[in-house]
Length: 271
Image (cartoon, rainbow, N blue to C red; front, side):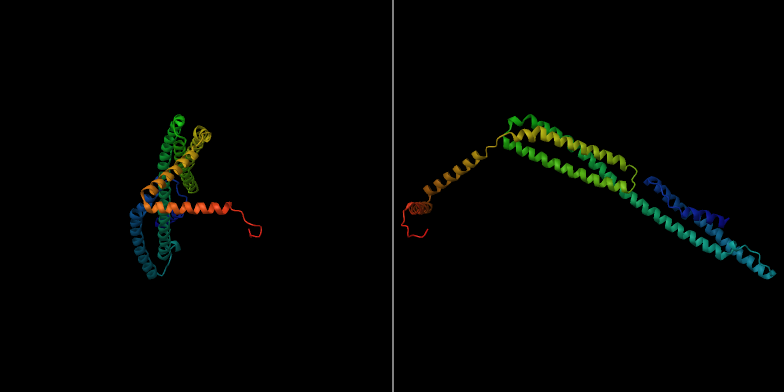
């Protein structure tokens, strides 16, 4: 009976066709633990009794001069098969634990993708509302203010795109790791990307294209800036004697430079 049990369990321990879900793997780990804590001690006691029985029979056969024991029942064979079974169980249990850790990593990654999809969906919805709102008030805004708002929206759209690309990378990892829901997650990320593409088109049609037809008063702003500098210089000259002397020196240099440029010279003067 013990040898039969060892053969049956050895076949089980050589099996590495594990289930694909974390729940089923944890059930398998629980079964492996029960084998170690429940079945092995009971069979260990059986083996101890058989070893004692074998020694008693061996003494008997030696006394009567007859040896008629099946080689499979020899205590050394039983010990060898037992040790192989214990090693196989140890290796299988380690393989189960490694697979559980791998599936737990995939599970955490999938949960991260779920959270990121939820945030991304919310951000896309918010951006769509803001794009439409900016489009409604585009004519009422100063062109520079409108351009600033569009730049902000573009930056946020780029951030969402980066998030979607990161999710695609994570989903690829899940698919390569044979995560059960990987295909479903991939489809959901694809839908988010399609929404992003539509939103990008909406931004162009509602804001970027209309904004490109507006004129920007850059020249006017520069003129105002120069006038401000001129007024500031005049005030400094009027209120500070040092600046007044500096201004007189600058004017003298300008006058002399003008005289030199307008003067006539003979043909023998090197140009």
